Length: 183
Image 1: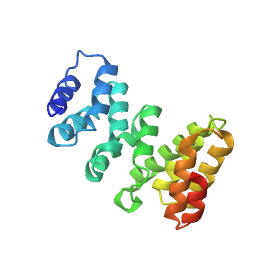
Image 2: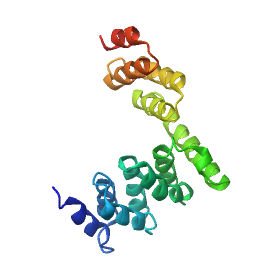
Image 3: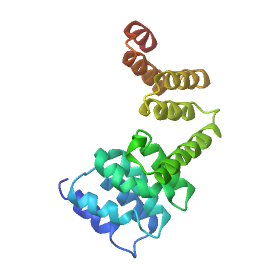
């Protein structure tokens, strides 16, 4: 709906709405990139409610790169761990050269916290899938492949592990292995 961005921005700008409602509006607003979304998410990234900031951090993945970095970097130093973790995941592929030294440290810390959170639930295939996707976004395909393989060992019926492993093998120009995984 072409009106969605404006309506979501309205909800996001209503301080009397609950944090969960405004945070959800922020998350959904990320799916409608444009000037309204950028303004709303930029403002919401400084909201006092951590649920709103978490919604912004979750929306970062959907935004164009320049907006993702401009809005997301301050969230790497958020007082709430959940916000820092989500921002670190969303900004994992940000070139370190584009960051100041304190922001680079904040990104490294946020990614380390994300890894810790995933490893705390390492008996679930989703955790290894998430770690694989983190490594893939950073260009570390061998580490991504290892996590996808662990995802499959942990949950042999977990289809996303196979799909991501096959895609990684394809990126490594191992087409026959990728086809075998999919079969």
